[in-house]
Amino acid sequence: MEHNYFNEDSDQMPRDFGNEESTMYEEISNFEGFNKILLIEDNPGDARLVELLLAESDLLNCKITNKTTLAEGITALEENDFAAILLDLTLPDSRGFETLEQLLKRFPDDNVIVLTGLSDKNLGVNAVKAGAQDFLIKGAFDADLLAKSLRYSIERSSVLKRLEETQRLSRIGNWEYIPDTKEFSASNEVFKVFGLNVQESSSLVDDLKNTEPAFQIFDEIHAETLAEKTLKKDIKIQLSNGETRYIYIQCRINSTAESKLAINGIIQDITERKLAEQELVKSQERYQDVFNKSKDAIYICTLEGRLVDFNEATTVLFGLDREELEKLEDIHTLYEPVN
Image (cartoon, rainbow, N blue to C red; front, side, top):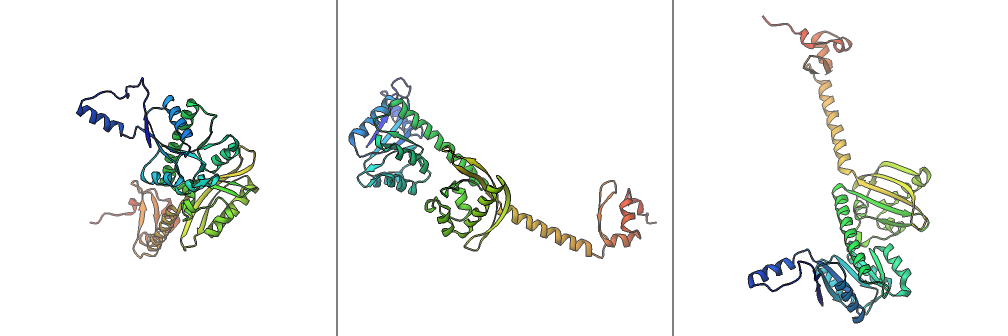
């Protein structure tokens, strides 16, 4: 079931057009300017209330698709992109926190706002911690609050996606670790550095170490950070598939909103840079080997004739030792014209 809403005072209010203009209007209406909202709610009364509140709000161009089961909602997400998902946690085929977990497991990057009953307020808070953008308590929000939540969550989601794309391009990720509970939350790029599937990754470090032993390096990182307060270093890791990677990490101690001790850090895959540096060193070593062992005189000088570097054969050619050559102002003065 889909519903479209327009602000009556807006220039985007439908009017009577001729056939050509009507077709043009329809194409414009189908443009991505629409805020496509997926409402997963099985209670007809609650679903209708959300529709009415959105119609009253100042959130323009909303297109609501209502699905009554989690399975139907997942199918809709597989077929379409939505700016936001309003998710009821109590559905015919799924109940409680598991509803959110199943949805985020399939679509970890989607913008989800949880709808809860008044008695489920703590569940709503935990839902946000688990990855939801926001939560709304049924019967406790009006048109303005609904529009505000949707608007902010859509913008936050857009910013996060741009951040993820930036991190992907620069191979930088960020993470947070809570020592007391061993909870580990991280951006997608952190898991990719270790060759892990983001959707299958746990939030506990011990589980992650079982999946990829290289994750044990975080035990050392966290221990050093707790001791030193801050940490910056390059690290070489060996993945279980035999691949060697180099990472740069920077982290420090902070506290969460609940005043819990936390370690926040960033990680960057610097493998390509390190391999390039190693190749450069090898190239320089090969050059120096050829340069020094050559029986021909080889030297490098400035335009003015000041020597920058020279090999042993150069000292033999000019009959001067290294110290004498280094003191020369102009190597060209050693040349005599041929008659």
